[in-house]
Length: 109
Image 1 (cartoon, rainbow, N blue to C red):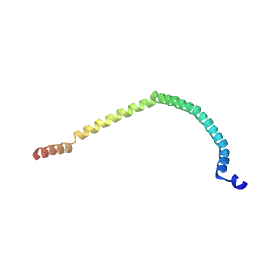
Image 2: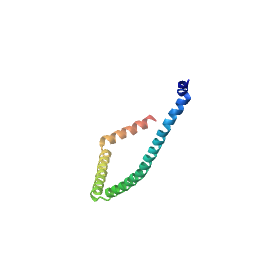
Image 3: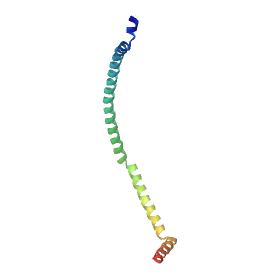
Image 4: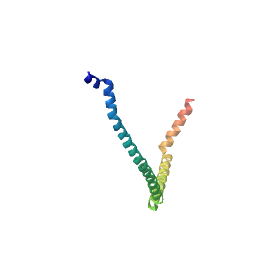
């Protein structure tokens, strides 16, 4: 009888619960310590990233070589686009196609 009582469901549950509680407390304390380190370190990392990003953007925007290259590329792009538009608008085939399309549309009415 004695043996049966020690291995009953209730006693096994209580015994295992008593074993689990200290480990649960240890895990909770460890997690809290880790979160406190991460929280403090995370704030420092975010502050550093913001400062570093601001400095990098400032250096890029104020770099005269880079700004000059961007200006040159924009100017060349505008000139190329202007020349392409001129060549398309002065194309005799395009003029003829537009004229035929307008005549065809006018005749359909």
